[in-house]
Amino acid sequence: VITVPAIWTDQARIFMREAALGANLIQDAKLYSEKVRICLEPEGAALYCFHHWLSDRPKSDVDLKGTKFMVVDLGGGTADFTMHQVIEWTRANYKLKFDEIAPPSGGPWGGRLIWDTFATKILQPVLGRLYTKFIKNDSFRCRFQLEAFDPVISIVPPEATSACTFKLGDLFSDLGLADDQSIFKNITNYNKRYHEQYRLRWIPRHKVLKIPVLVVRSWFMVALDPIMRHLDRLSEKHRDVQLAFLVGGLGANNFVFDTLRDFLKARRISLYQPPDAGLAVVMGAKLVFFFFIFFCSHTLSL
Image (cartoon, rainbow, N blue to C red; front, top):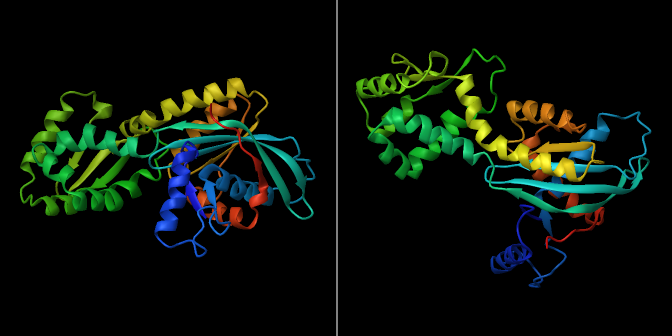
């Protein structure tokens, strides 16, 4: 099973089959072999989400037939949205069939926007001349992002007065920075431009940078603002949709969930975030392979 973003064109999906064929992953050497299936990421997530959503309601006898729902898949690069309706439902043997009720939609509003905002708004003024060296070195950038950035922003403190702590020691070593006086000077200049509640705090002894939660949340809003505008359009057009599933790496974030839950609640849509939301697509792809019949039709974008 090869997963692809929902907003990819049919040509792009065919290219993935051709790539699988070129890599000798299709044993019978047929482009449209049933041994390889293309799974839209939100569709795989839909199966995974329904599995857990129903597990949380073991005694519920609700008839899901006719239920219209939305999958909000927020990944690293894109935000994908799909709309479905349950056309067949039997709890006894867990039989579900879905129809797509609107073309897949979305945009480049993934977690990368948060990193890009942090890099340009914080790292660039803090590192000064060293920023060019940092941004051009993939090894430095990836190590810092994986070890010092992602773990911190994965859980944003709910208290508006708290701060997030970023460790810069390893980054300084990578950049060959022995004296952090220039960093202190850069941070001092940065703080002169902002009100006290938005200022950075440098702790030289531990080489850590404390950034107010208000600032960290503003990075998320760079992605969340266009996401919410898109959700607003979808909810206005499909007013009978009352359930949404939130998945993807960015969708697993607590601040993202809280923000979108409150936003959709005002539009009478209940938002559900499954366990391990960041793995929903992968886990769902497994279900798609065994239960491919679940998705009966797709709506084409014109």
